Length: 196
Image 1 (cartoon, helix red, strand yellow):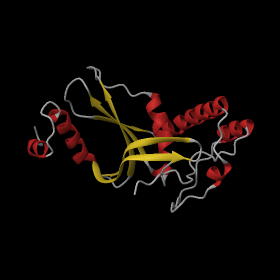
Image 2: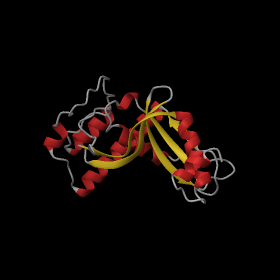
Image 3: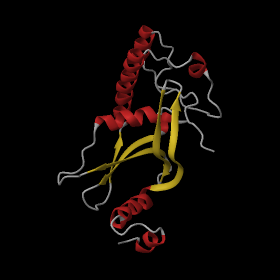
Image 4: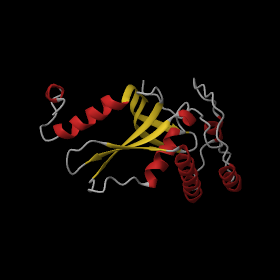
């Protein structure tokens, strides 16, 4: 194994070392700096979740990464649309959603193998965002849940979004029909719950 000394020093169980060794290799090849790990994200739109890794990649660009374990077959891993929905929801809670890359990272649970990543295109994330927002609207209507107006209108705390938000007319129309004052896709209104 490439990182045997580090794995021993970290006291990683021997059965897991080959899996972790592949992760460390992927990490060293791709990550320049960690911004946060296991970050709780809370949206004023009425949803929350935990982002696995928010980092600066070797090329200097920010990325939101989500780890997935999967029994990978010979044909390679499956990448599911639902993974893009999750990333689309989370990325809109970050300070610069339009300039943040969204990446799913598959770890083979059957046997130690190099990790496989998929960077979702801007088009894929845009489409996933539409699906997620529609599902959120349906869920909120069904549960008769609407985030408070104060939460939705609260200005971003310390966030300086320099990019113009993506306009999502279909979502605005759906929210208007349901009585929601939801923001257009891409705007950030104080979503990140700080753990410090």
